[in-house]
Length: 259
Image 1: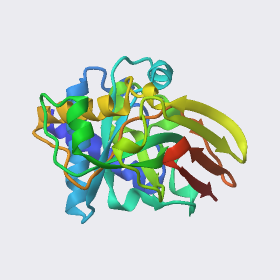
Image 2 (image 1 turned 90 degrees about the horizontal axis):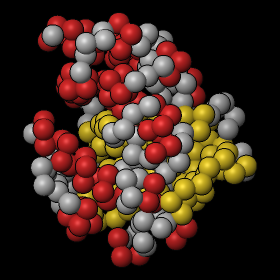
Image 3 (image 1 turned 90 degrees about the vertical axis):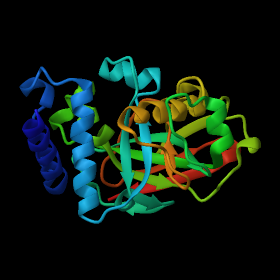
């Protein structure tokens, strides 16, 4: 199994570097468990750290019913965010650096304290949070045609590619994150709406889930990290020439362009 995990990690890393997707892992290795797929992801993380990349945070995926329904799953997943994935507000992304990108609008959490499971609650998350910030996660699949099941996306670092971080930082006390609205525009056309409650009822619940899940691998959420708690609507495909903006009411907005 160790050899297979290493081989699949290598396949996914090569697919990311070349933008040449691979066939679904679950079609070729039906016996792989979700736990196995997390070990594939962690092998990828290990190799990226050896290359000199730095972890700047983590992401939860599949927290909204819309995304779970899209993939036919009933549980979230997670991935790691690296320094070369961070994009500043209103920056332009080269779409040819990815395979088949889509966008998700999320309320990002920046931690002031470490969080380590297994018994983290959403109250613990709120107390450990320094700021929340508008974000757009650009997801991408190194699996051909997005033909993914839970094992595929977990192995592929939660299908994460980039994270666009807004400029407005708000404290937890400045908004009710459960009812905070999200309005997503593509080329000035409304394409999705949502609210904080879409992420497991409250975005902080999703962060708590992540802290507890990571405890299975003796990993904690660290002070200073950016944590993405999951999309507030279904993912929206993007193409060259698209301009995207997500508005989060009093929390501000974040924009990105693709060329």
